[in-house]
Structures are given as structure tokens and as C-alpha cells.
Image 1 (cartoon, rainbow, N blue to C red):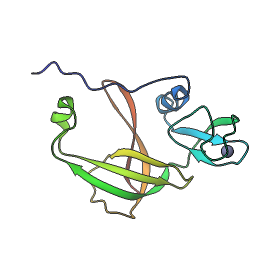
Image 2 (image 1 turned 120 degrees about the horizontal axis):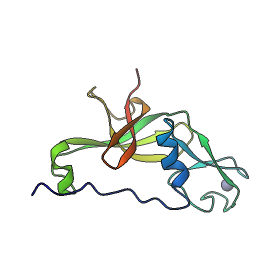
Image 3 (image 1 turned 45 degrees about the horizontal axis):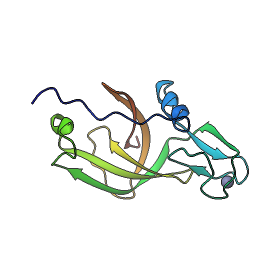
Image 4 (image 1 turned 180 degrees about the horizontal axis):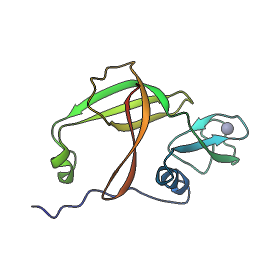
Length: 133
Ligand SMILES: [Zn+2]
């Protein structure tokens, strides 16, 4: 079975600006203009104060590893060629927690500082994190 395609991302009016920011080489996330808190994934409404006054702004790209796991059995057959891979939950400096993949080969542990790195595959650009230099 060689014709299996990678699952595609879901682009909707709320997430479009996030995905476009990856194409423009730096991740933007939603910040509420009422309470100033950040959120990710993108939504119509602020998850903290329910304001509708949200804008996309560049994030620092910095955070630390809250959790990680190495995946040896892919959750989708199209990931077989990149298995094993490492999944991370990153706590961004801005506050949101992001489920992502590790880029780079450096050893990484819980609490390590990481920085954003935009990678790409056949479906476009992805937000990954690597150990901070
Ligand atoms: Zn808010």
C-alpha cells in the first residue's frame, strides 16, 4: 500500500490566519484584545473572557516541554515512513499549550527550553519545536 496520503489539516475561517502565518515563516496566534490572554487552537471567542475581540499576533516561538512521547506505531498509515517520531506538548511563554512534533535530533526532556521551527510536508507547513540553541 503505497498510495496513502497524509491526513490534511483543517482550515476554517478561524484557523486560516494561523496556517497562513506558517507560510509567511513565523507563527501567529490569537490574542484577546479585552483580557490580553492568548489562545491556541484558534476560535471565534476568547476561551478566557468570551470576548469576540481577537487578533492574530506573532508569538515569541519560545516555550518549554510539558510532556513528550515517542510514537513507534503510527496513528495513521501515512506516518509509517516517519516513524518513530516524537510528540510534544509545549507550554508557550504566551500561555497556550501546543501539541506538536519535535524537529531536530537533539535529546529532549521534560522542562527543556524549546523554540519554534516551521517544517513542511506534502500538505504544507507545520509548527514544530526543537531544543533551544
Ligand atoms: Zn479574553
